[in-house]
Image (cartoon, rainbow, N blue to C red; front, side, top):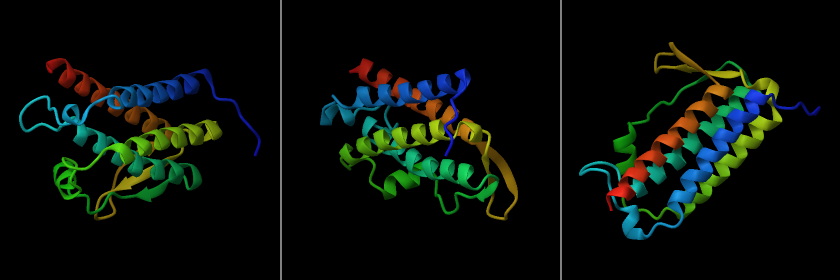
Length: 167
């Protein structure tokens, strides 16, 4: 494989993705068990639940990124996903330890960043999302994935910051 350098814009986007993941992990790693169960508001998600949610995001999107690069334009579906609340309840986000999920978040970030860096000419390759009837509902490129995963990590880091400030 011939190595192709990232553009300045791509490098900046990848740096932001890595920074967002590193910052998220840095906020979480020193927290106590009681800190992990803090919430921004009653009925809101705890820090523990947010960690599991972010980890699951990596599971879902790492594979889609590989699909976009290996088979551009492939149909993609998230069938049978019951929604965040039902998913979190079924997988006991509220009660499970976060250690394995922190490892996954780190691994997902490194793997997706390496994949994106290895294929700079493929950042516009995409997957085509379809609904349960096979109707196209959207297209998501590798670049789009990096952008919204970065924003997602940043949003949850901000939420955790607010939770910890209320302590």
